[in-house]
Image (cartoon, rainbow, N blue to C red; front, side, top):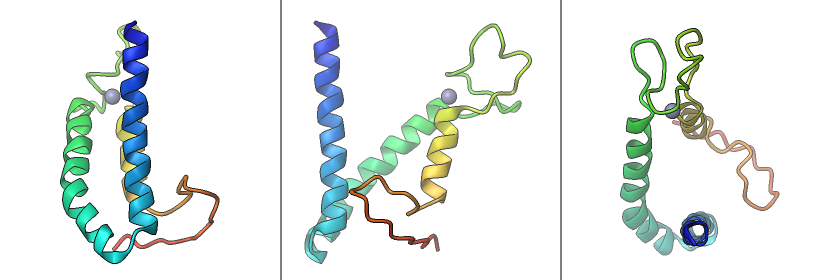
Length: 108
Ligand SMILES: [Zn+2]
């Protein structure tokens, strides 16, 4: 039961994200601008909320992801944190949308 509910949530989340990327990529300028206004603040808030939860402590350890038994030795960088960093800073490389390999590296 709860699995079904969760997978439904997960599905609609992914559908929403797919719609956002598709509109951003293929929508006209007007739709893209509206989309950005509507969705960007929410996406930023989402990323921030996730990063807050995975904020490394002063030893570089994630309080959310650390596992009890090996956390004291390995200052394991949090994978959630790392992938957020990578996705945001390595922009445009290998975007997962539809097989067009455009090497856009507009980061600034
Ligand atoms: Zn984490």
